[in-house]
Image 1 (cartoon, helix red, strand yellow):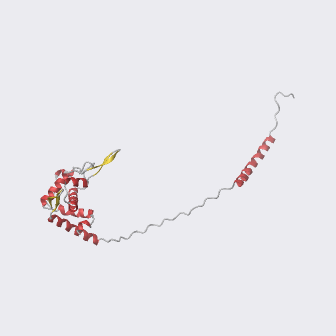
Image 2 (cartoon, helix red, strand yellow):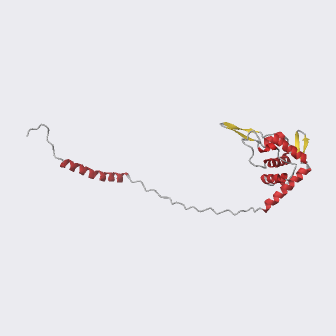
Image 3 (cartoon, one colour):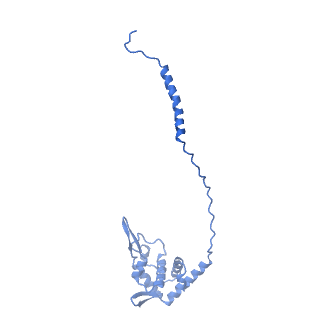
Amino acid sequence: MSKVYEVSPRALIDKCAEELKQISSITPPEWSSFVKTGISKERPPVRLDWWHVRMAAVFRKIYINGPIGVSKLRTAFGSKQNRGFAPERFKQSGGSHIRMILQQLENEGFLKKVEKGVHKGRILTPKGKTFLEKIAENVALEQKDKPKNVEKKPREEVERIPNIKSAPAPKKEEQKKKNKKKEEPQSTEDTSSTEEKPKKGKKGAKK
C-alpha cells in the first residue's frame, strides 16, 4: 500500500508545497495576493504561500479520488457561509483558482484528462504518482524518527480543603429557654421604671 494513505495529510501537503515551490514554471498569478478562495470566505488567505499549499492539497485529492473534475474539487474545498442571524449554508469554493492549478499541473506533466465510464476528469500520470509517493516516503521516515512516547509532566498536587461540618441546629426547647432568659431582665427593668415614676395629680383637682 502506498505511503500517501498512511502519513499525516497536513505533513504531506506542507512537504509537497515546498517541493512545488522549487519548480520554476509553477508560479501564482498576480491576483492571488488579494483574491478570496470562495464566496463563503470574508477575507483572502493569510498565508503568503497559499497557492502552493492549495496545489499540494489538490494533488493529493486527485491521487486518492481521481478521476475528478473541477466541480467535485469545488465541493471538497467548500465551507459554510456565515449569514448573520440566518442559519449557515454550505457554499462551494471558487473555481477559477482550482482550474488554473489543474492547468499548471497538467502543463508540468503531472496530470492528464481521462474518461472512465460515467466519471471523467483528471488523474495523475506516472510522473505525478512517483513525485507524490517519494514525498510521502520521506514524510514517513521523518515521522518514524520522531519520538512517540513523550514524557508527560506530573500534575501539581493541590491541597484539598477539609470539609467543615456545620454545627447541629439547636433544639426548640433550648431556644425557648434562651428566649425566656432574654425576656426576664427586660420585664424587671420595666416594672422598676414604672414604680419610680411619681404619680401626677389630676388636672383641676382641688388642693
